[in-house]
Length: 141
Image (cartoon, rainbow, N blue to C red; front, side):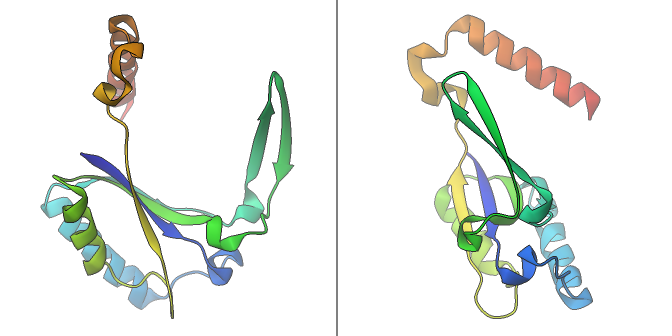
């Protein structure tokens, strides 16, 4: 299964405080372990929400709100995309992760939908389109 592992933001990450050299080194070692284990598919840190925007959909209309966004605890400071055997395996890897921030931190794990999760609504034509798009993305990487 694939899962997205999200590092929740805090006041420091939202203020643009950069991680220490020590933390960058520890995270680098952790990422090396993930790569060696064949788990890491992608991973990045995210800029503060002050450099972001939200697009709200209401029927056919769209409205844009520029950051920053108020609820820091609901924001994401970084993420990984992992390929693991189970949620339990993902949890065990997260427990080995260096603490992303001084003090308290929170990391959320969410399973990524796979094609079969969508059932009959994901028709053979839609599956073919999805496969074609994934192949195009992989070719550009």
